[in-house]
Length: 290
Image (cartoon, rainbow, N blue to C red; front, side, top):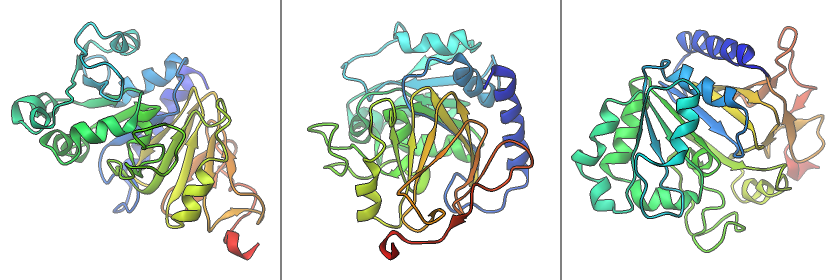
């Protein structure tokens, strides 16, 4: 998908948002962008900047999932947003929960249009920000129609169930940190899924938690979520894991391509080409019945 196509997708999502009913899975207000890591396509960052409001949007980058103790305005992770046209990009970081729970630290988020969580280990974001004024300010940003995005760990943190959240190793799917920020309710998000041969990993999570929808996002790929609908953008695949619904009653997961759309409320997918036809007969056949 090229830049023109991605910007068209942004327009479509804005139109959809204007007619949305009350949400049950995605955000009632605002927009999410979840990228699967390894983002090389500048159009993904350009889409994020466009959703934020364009070049003059106030963008805050939170790199706390990374392994460094300190990040400042020289942090190289800001460059991709400047290259995408953003003129106002700020870094926000602490590992001190007391600092994160102060109004002086969270104040920059009160005027922000968009926030981006960089990659690393998602549990570090929980340890630093969960149940603080900073987390509250992030939710307020969404409520007033802002944008929250992130790549790799910054995508996973947006789900309600935190996969790979064990502080000992990133190979444990269900570990000592299991609660994400919950911008997507009853959803677990994994990343790098095909590039790192992790496309079977979410199966154990949704077997243990059948109410949870699993979403695996490959590298250089993202989903843009408005209300209960998301669209796939980028150059790879998104993998859907659903204990209760599958394609033609076979398999444990299925794939969405760039341009495909997914209803998080009904858990139905539609192809992005033509008239948006449904995927090949998605059936309500629970795994236990097969």
